[in-house]
Image (tube, rainbow, N blue to C red; front, top):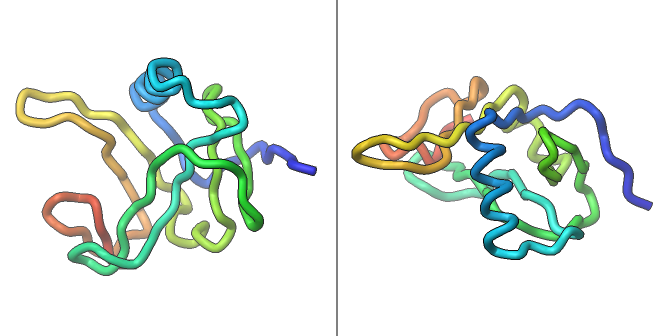
Amino acid sequence: METTTLTTPVTLTDSAISVLKEIITDQNIPSEHGLRIGVKGGGCSGLSYILGHDVVKEGDDVYDVGGVRVLLNKAHGMYLAGMEIDYYEGLENRGFVFNNPTAKSTCGCGSSFTA
């Protein structure tokens, strides 16, 4: 039986929530899917972020963040605690931005980090 946890270690800004809801609607993402946030080995700095829609897997915690269903593998919590995901739209680029206070260093593109 799946349970939804109330307090998430990751926050989403209003801008990120708005874009994610738009993506869910535009791409017709099934309601049993959620936004998977995690890490994997790789990238210039050692760890890269995972951000995509997925189904609940064993070892996941499920959160509701502003109406967005968020899936986090429990093992990734130590790398993601306190992280904020924002959506930036500027003249030169746009996309999701990971503001991670547990990252010791990040690469120039901001998509990988050292813990």
